[in-house]
Structures are given as C-alpha cells and as structure tokens.
Length: 368
Ligand code: F6P
Image (cartoon, rainbow, N blue to C red; front, side):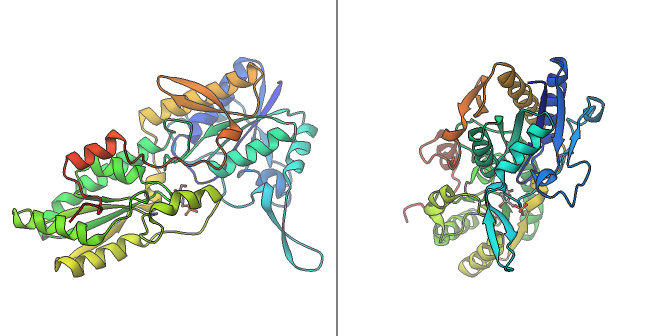
C-alpha cells in the first residue's frame, strides 16, 4: 500500500500510543503515508462532529515521544459500532444499520487501501467485516483484561497488574492497623486475570474471579482462620465480573460479545456480606478506570511497539484479515475469523491458579 489508516476502538489501554507511533514510523520507513481515524470510526461515521479532520494525516512529528503516554491520541469510543449503528429512521424509530461499507468507500476515496485496527473483541469483529468487504485489514489486539484468545497477552495488562499490585501493597498496612477486611475491586468483565495476577503479586488472601463459582462462606472461613492465628486482617481481590450469579457462565455469555452494560459495585456487596459473616469491619475499594490510565510499563511499551511494527510488516508482506499476536518468544499472525467472539478466561488447570492455591489463597470454592 501507499497510504494506510489506523483506528483505535473500545476501552483505552496503556500502550495504544506506542502502537500508533510504531505504525507511523514503520510506515514512513517504507515511504507510505499514514492517516489516523478519530474515535474508533466516528471520524468517518459522524461527519457532523468532524467535518474536516475525521481522518487526518499522521506525520512522524505528531507521534514523536508519545510511546510513554496513556490513552490514545486518536481518541476511542465504546459506541458507534459500524456493524450495528443506531440510526433514527424517517418515522422517528431507532434502528441498527450496518454502515461498514461507508468506511471502506470513504477510505478508498481518500486513496487509503489498508487499515490497522487496534482494539478488543468488538473492534476485531469490525476489522474482520471490513476485510470481507475488500479493505486490507490487520488487527492489533488490545485489552487490559487479557481476555483475548489467540495471543498470550496484550499491552495494557501488565500496566494494570502493576498498578493493582501497588494498590494492594498499600492496603496491607491500613488493613492490618485497623484489623479490617479490605475488598479490592479490579476490572475484568469476563475474566479474572488482573485479579489473579494482582492478587498473587500483592499477597491477597482471597481472590474472586468470574471463572470460579465461589461461596463467600469459604472466604469468611479463611479470614477467621487467619484471625485465629493472630492475623487480624485480610485482603480480598475481586474481579468486577465475579458476580456469583454470572459465575462460570460469564465466559459463555461473553461469546455473545459487545455488551457495554456497566458492571461494578461487586466489592461493596462482598464487603457487606463478609462483614456479616465474620463480624469484622470491612471496606471496599474500587480501582476501576485507574487501571486503564497512566504510563505503560516497559513490557507493555515493548509489546505495543512490536505489535505496531508487526502490523506494518504484515501489510508489507501482503497479508489481510489477520491479527498480530504474541506467541512467546515471537509475534505471529492469526486469522481474524479465529479471534472474533472468542474470549480467554483464566485456565482452571493452569499453574498460575495452582500457585495461588499452593500459597493458601482462597478462591471461595474450597471443600468445607
Ligand atoms: O474491557 C475493558 C474494560 O476495562 C472492562 O474491564 C470494563 O468492564 C470496561 O472496560 C469498562 O468500560 P467503560 O470504560 O465503558 O466503563
């Protein structure tokens, strides 16, 4: 290609700007021009918001020194999925319309024949649809939750885990001073990766994740057992998606994909119930969007730069309809159709989970 575009969609993740920088610089090295699309695809679909610069030239100067910055200079959105774009009909009713064809024709009219789509499951599903409509498309996986299949990990996850760990470290001393239970809620809509890794690294005493149906009585038993040995405080990590009613079914539900229903509030409910069950004072702390902000760790920067450069190489090699992925030690390519709609939960027989159990961490599913 001579002209390529890049778009970032879905929740932001530390490392997005590093991907953008790698794409722009690697493209420039090949003599290609790079264009940025604003806020997912809204730069094209919402012409009223962006009459002139919804798609704009990204020069190498514009991406200088941005790899360490959180967020995305292109902007992003969870709304305006082109495959199901809510539009008001002449009779006043709202209907979902497939507007993906407009994206292909708009880009082609600008002389852009290839697109790098950075995003999670929803964005990669859109990427696949655009590829089927004749645009050359390469996907780059993005999720702080680490729930995308076919890639070992993605940028943003390490940063989120590092921050969660720092927060848990800080909570130990205040929890111990007050002999309290601290319930820490982290993101993780369908999968408990951040809770698991942050909980192990931060020495949590219990971890609740969507993949495991838990019983808070087991967690209370663990807390009382600690109490009996003179450890009068406990830290409980909970993934926002670990709603008992969802339990083990959350991942199957996720296969339906694209739900933007707001979660949250689970920590408060867990804290109240544990307070009742143990008679100990409990407090809830919600880390939420703090996990998505800030500067990416060195690991995430390197992963993001590798993904961006690999996406450009893939275009150079003539690929389309693939996602770059991390298959240690290298980046490889997987077909987008194998990725869309597939989520990756914490494997119940994996050694990380087993390590947590060997360390005595409760998952609320122990035999009583
Ligand atoms: O998918 C990433 C994620 O951070 C989820 O863990 C969380 O449920 C969701 O995004 C929150 O999205 P929003 O930014 O719309 O609140």
